[in-house]
Each structure stands twice: as structure tokens, then as C-alpha cells.
Image 1 (cartoon, rainbow, N blue to C red):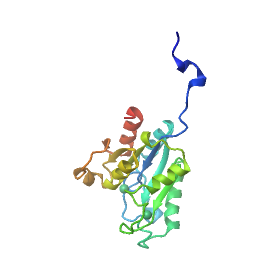
Image 2 (cartoon, helix red, strand yellow; image 1 turned 60 degrees about the vertical axis):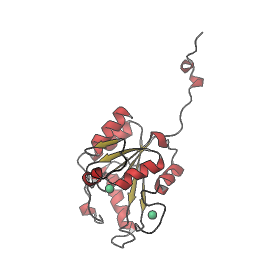
Image 3 (cartoon, rainbow, N blue to C red; image 1 turned 90 degrees about the vertical axis):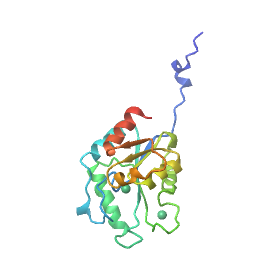
Image 4 (cartoon, helix red, strand yellow; image 1 turned 180 degrees about the horizontal axis):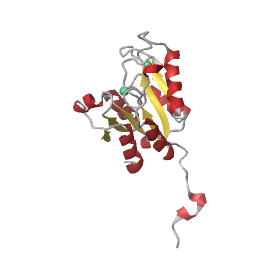
Length: 192
Ligand SMILES: [Mg+2]
Ligand SMILES: [Zn+2]
């Protein structure tokens, strides 16, 4: 008796949900700059485009989730931030699927500022996302905690604030990597 149902195409149930990588912006996707507001100060890492390409080839949605309290602090306004996101998109050939941002102060009590998960919930409303097979990658403890809170896997990068973060983590992320590209290589190769 042939019990191998996978040979019958009708029995293959496709998961309609996509895996996603939620990526922190400052210090992870781009160089850390205190309250980045000017396009002239925007600098992608030399490997950012390669990392993004590898994720796309592996079928990940790429979603940026970023705390931008500089808006509430009136250091820059939303349109200046959007201009920076448009420039990032242009440099990455439009490969970022979406950007979500929290404009509030850390003590505002909002639900969107990481490590809260409203940005991820919004992404899940906009895309069909398989959170269990998704990742949160960032350089701060609050990024890793966002992943824990949302139920994704987590990766800490040692760029940006990563070196400071790694010494005072209470709960280890699934992986710690030198930078975004090294993290992505582990994500796409091991899928652990
Ligand atoms: Mg960061
Ligand atoms: Zn917020």
C-alpha cells in the first residue's frame, strides 16, 4: 500500500502564510546615528544590500520596525523620516516590504514602541505572516524582547549598540551574529 500522500498533489497543503524578518533600522540595517534626520547622514552598511537579497531569495518578507522618538522630541518630523525610508528603499531596489515606526516618547505609554508588539501586529494585519517561522533582528535588548513578546525567533547583531547589549542580556536570543549579513546567513542556512 502506498501511503506516501505527498505524491498526490491534492494532498499538499500549502501554508498560505509567509515567513518574515522584522529588522530594526538604526544600528542594524543602517549605521547608528543619534536621531538620524538628514539624508546626508544616512549610511547603509556595505553588506546591507547583500543581506536583503539573501532574505528575498529565501522567500522572507522584509519588514522594518523602528522606534523614532525623535519625532515626539521634535528633532525631526515624519516627512523627514519618510524621506530617509524612501532613500533606503531606493538603495535596496525596493526590496523592503514595509516600514513601521513608533513616533512616541519612551515614557508615553504607547503600544507601538518596541518592546511592545503593535508594529508587528500591524504587519500581521497587512500581510499573512507565520510568526513562528519569522525572526526579529536588532542591536538592542528591546529588539530582542520584541521578538520574545511577538513569538518570533530572535537574533542580536553586534553592530550599533549590540556590543553593549550582549553583556547585559537576561535571556539569550536564538543567535548572536557579528552583523546583519552574518545573522542572515545563519537564518537562511540553518532556519533554526
Ligand atoms: Mg537599533
Ligand atoms: Zn508608539
